[in-house]
Amino acid sequence: MPEKESKNLKDGVAVTADVVLTNYSVCEGLEKEIRTKNNLTIKEVSGRGKKGDVKIDIVVSYCKGCEICVAFCPEKVLAMEREIAKVVDISKCTNCNICEYLCPDFSITVESL
Ligand code: SF4
Ligand code: SF4
Image (tube, rainbow, N blue to C red; front, side):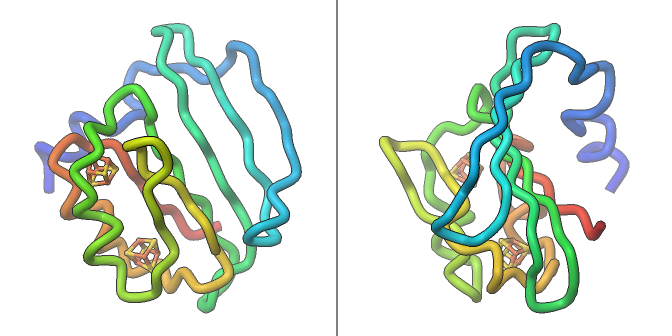
């Protein structure tokens, strides 16, 4: 999907700014909060999913809280917190990318590691 790729958060958004590392005990993964040069905040969670290691990025600044990703994730990996999507259990993720394809605001990306 070229249009989606062209708006991928990694395009032109170097993630070299402040990075805050925190343990993420809920899903036994690792959560990073990243602030980009463009002043975007990205919540990145990586860990072992059902089909191998996976990383889920949610651009907090883009998320409008529509809940589509939460509603359609077949594994209940995602939930809403204060009207922003968040990863609650990465161990169930199957890397199906449904959330990424359905997000209308290009806020969420899923990558196999
Ligand atoms: S589908 Fe996208 S915009 Fe909607 S809640 Fe999920 S991440 Fe946010
Ligand atoms: S890739 Fe699939 S299983 Fe993983 S969070 Fe997105 S919709 Fe859920």
